[in-house]
Amino acid sequence: MLGALILYMVYDDFDFSQFWGELRNMNLFWFAVSTFFGVMSHVLRGWRWKLSLAPLGYNPSSAVCVNSVYIAYAANLVLPRVGEVSRCVILDRHERVPFAHSLGTLVMERMLDTLMVLLITLVAVAMQWPVFCKFINEAGVEVPGGDMLSSPRGLTVILLSMLAVAILLFLFIRKLAIWKKIKSFISRFMEGLLSLRKMKNGWLFLIETVGIWFCYFMQFYLCFFCFDFSSDLSVAAALLLFVGGSIAVVVPTPNGAGPWHYVIMSIMVLYGVTKTDAGTFALIVHSTQTLLVALLGLYGIAALQLRNVRRKKREL
Image (tube, rainbow, N blue to C red):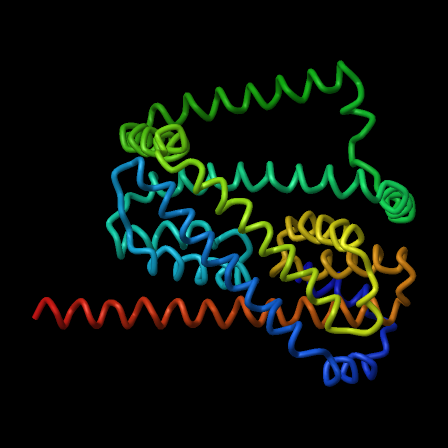
């Protein structure tokens, strides 16, 4: 609902006749190359996950890891943030990897991905500082409760309140009969989280991490060449747009729908692209990339089902 509301607000006065025209005339070669990088980002993420599980003594199938990534991203379209849980469930069901262990490795991966976003953001902002400042000023960004957070007394009150709630929650859970199960889950979770320390092929993990984000960027950047109005935008401009879009998808809407469109349109206008062209670009790119995620998810489900059928035939 939130995504639909924001999309309505962004495209309330949009002329959709140009959208269909640009969709028919878009350069399909660059779109195909962009799609290739989009698929590879998922494949690399699946391979990296398998690598992070090796220190824990697990060697799941590469195909299962990759297909679980396909399904996870498609699941996020239905219910944002449920994808990570579905990945762990799939690996538990098909490869007997404990849920807590796989979840710990996912949290570790997300921490590294967050670090990558921060590094890319620093580079993009440094390269495009004037445009970034203009975007922030025009967006009128304000932090809710900013006065409270800026006051030492207010910040202390907030931190102490959070600490008190955490202690009460801990004492309550400790009284429950499931405390031992929770402790076991936390222990396995921490093992998964710290699996990177025991990794023998850390260099390969690093290469795959960089490769994932390179593919993400190329999937987005190559879309510029699909349209005449965006083909002249620089790599630096693409980097700032990419960072803005990556941050926008944090909002819990399907694939960042709504916030992503707003950010991309707002920044493209600062580079001289008309509002209509920017809206067309955002709508086409987001729609086609979301369709790709959905199709890969369906493929992943079919592939795992076929794998189960073949395994049952071998067991007969």
